[in-house]
Amino acid sequence: MRKNVFIAFLCVLFLSACQQEEWFTSEELKDNQVVFKLQCAEFEDENGLNRNGLERNVPYDRVEFCVADKQGYAVTSIKGVYDAASSELRFEGLQEGEYTLSIIGIKGDAQADGVTINPVVHISEPWLVFPSSLSKPLEADYFYSQTPFSVSKEWGKDGYETVVSAPSRIVQKHIVGRVDFSFDFNNRYIRTAVIGKKVQIGKVRFYTTFSAEGSFSGESKEIFLDTLGIETSSRSFHFPPTAGSSLQGEIDVFTRNYRGNEVKCTYVFDTGEIIPNRIHAVVTHVVHPDDDAGIMFITRNAYGEGNHARILQDGEPKEIYTDASQRGFNTAQPLQVSATDDGRLHVRFYSPRSLSGVLVKARIPSVGNEYVDLAYFDSIPSFADFYETMPLMEKDGMYHTESGRWIQIPKQDVTSGADLTFKIESGDAYWKKLQAIKHGWNISFELYGGNPDAADGGPVGNWMGIRPVHCREVVALFLNFTYMIDMQEHEEILRANEDRLYGNGGVNDKVTAETVLRQMRQPRTLRVGLVYPGNGVVGLGGGSTFGAYQPAWMQHYFDTYSCEVMFHELGHVMGYNHSSSFTYGPWAQELMNHFYVEHISEMPIDKPDYLNTKENPYLY
Image (cartoon, rainbow, N blue to C red; front, side, top):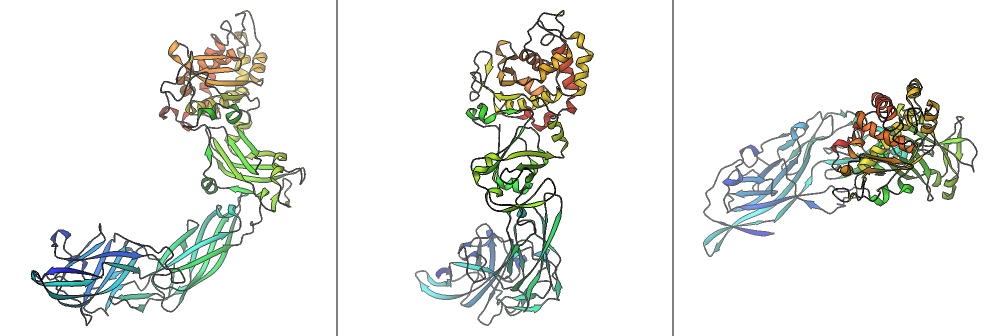
């Protein structure tokens, strides 16, 4: 308790203490006032315990108060105001006597609930009234407190003084109950495959009237609540206390599986009577027909929860992205699937585009020669670097085979991961384009002495430090190039212009279209870098070396000159010099560069929008 001293000769201001609309602004209050600090308690659990033990300040959206005398009648000869910023309720005009202060704090939109606040003459009268036909949970939260205090006069050094005996703070409690719906799943992949949950509540009656003295009365009509949707793994709803009945009903859980089927599971619940300030926990233990399934069903929700990394992202250390063992790939196998030594499935994707509907199958030698469905991805993001422990290494499970059977596979030892053979299927049109890359080139990234950490790329000779923003475009270009070399239209343009193809000996050194196709399709390994244009050089190539200056990496989708730079250096990679048509000649300067740009819509990476490199802040 604390004592607040008022000068005895206060001017008495008249205000209805139960009408918020008549409150004065905080600037109108004087220094000689009593202040109540408002706090609210957390809901109590089913045992009546506040688990968090916390009391917190809440900036209420609306506060109603009633100061009553010893006989319970509302006192009008006071002035009060609520300050939301400080969570304080301040009063002036208190006379000698014993009082009871009743406060309702509202957080949220009470109008959305159809709640009315009545003026009261006596604290036994209806104060807060819920609608009699409540058909949905409450939108707002409602708090209440009742606090006795007294006012007396005592002689002090300045004469008679008014002394207020009152608590330093008021802790309010909820006048409604909370129902928490939560769900337990036996299979984590079923939890993330939920597409909807609904709660249907049977007939129930709620109390409708709450008085300033803190008692409930009145009953609603017998109500059948509208269906409630639960979007997440758990959800809380607020209800007025029930009038002698329990809250009961059904819960529907809707899921889908990787084969496109939907399953509905229904469960019943009964909360018992809804009690003010109490949490009523409804835990649904989901028993599902796919509980024993061993497949990793990686929905978008499941993938997001995994917080999986991505490769070749801005800020990735140069020691990683220039290490061919960590960041190298073959363009015919941009989607890399493997099992780690500790029993995790590893999926890495060298692609500027995402891939949808991906089924990973595995052949397990200890089980048999038939492939089984191991993992299904709703979507694999661009440059994904997915790691997750396989249920195969955790427990027995049921798996679907290629022949359509369901078989049980016992838990495997993590060391057996090295024996797995993988196969990938997808109906995505993008996957069909990637599968059309038959003659892949091995691509990795090289600094060639440059320093990507330096603002200017730390140029050394004709090279500067390649950054991840450029590496991603390298992936795009070489996926497109190795796709192009097997396009029927590409073969046709080479054969139609065979008389314009000549080698290192000049125009008389004829080269057949078949020879060019064979050279373009043979396995190659390139270490790709970023060319420094300060010496007048925009591209370098030969053997396993390839590089181009920054604008070419950004513009290869639409600019024939940038493509000319690329194909000029590819001509060197194939062994041709400047006397051939493959560098300063028709192959690089007319046929290939124009074909690439004109057919970009048919390529795997058909537009620059996937990477949006031109907007990247890490460009030089």
